[in-house]
Length: 111
Length: 113
Image (cartoon, rainbow over all chains, first blue to last red; front, side, top):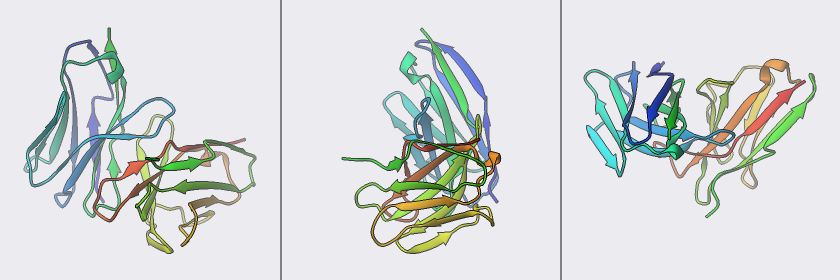
């Protein structure tokens, strides 16, 4: 089955700096890659997603890049704010049914 | 514009009891997924259901766990004879169809004493 690895497990940045979280996947058939933000005590919230037919997608301060050849994808958050502090999960899917999640990155934005 | 709803939000059970977790999908969504999250870990897929059908239960433990999504009412994840290792957060997600974005509920946090 699919194996998704996520790095780093923890990340601290100064407010205003950029944050980058990287994920790799093993199954070349994976074609959908969502990113979720999870705040303490809450469910994961979708923040951005990308399909394998595009290499990059941007939504305001958040962007995702995908390298199908290398089988890795990354989340980029620019101009970070304290409210960006949360745990971020990447996921990969082949069939759209099962999502395989990374182990999460705890992001802390220091004011 | 209600999102995915789960109840209860917190559930405490003693070993050997039954736990019933409920999930109401977003309006217009007929596909439901259940995931389990252990402390400081990612979410692990358990089961995928459509109305009255189990589509994929490859992530579900073979014993004590069952899931249903009846024609009327919420999806139910049932855990019989709970053990301490069942303590986790259980999340439900829904989507309008296969291969579509999944939207998650707030989760049910199960604690087995």
